[in-house]
Image (cartoon, rainbow, N blue to C red; front, side, top):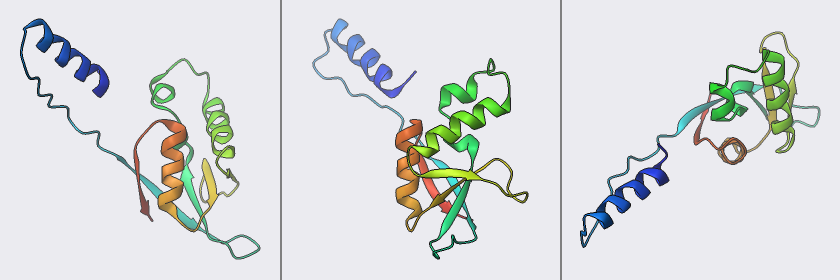
Length: 125
């Protein structure tokens, strides 16, 4: 049950019981940690950070077992990353990576949170 549904359920019950005041104790959403791994800078010297592609999947995509292969999830994550400036990271050392050119990993985490619908807190590796 989402927090909004829990609030609606609580308030509806309070109205039906003819209560004057309804106090909702909704648990806070705990943000997930998003680990940014520092990778070599680009040709102009700008810092780059890589994240795993599963961090760019929505909660529904993570729970959905009907997707035929990992390739499809990686393609969806790559398209989503391209909208916010991310690119595939082609490196043997870091498989399944998406790379972002960023001076602020907190802002990048906020963009990823907005695109995926999940709450993230940035952590540098």
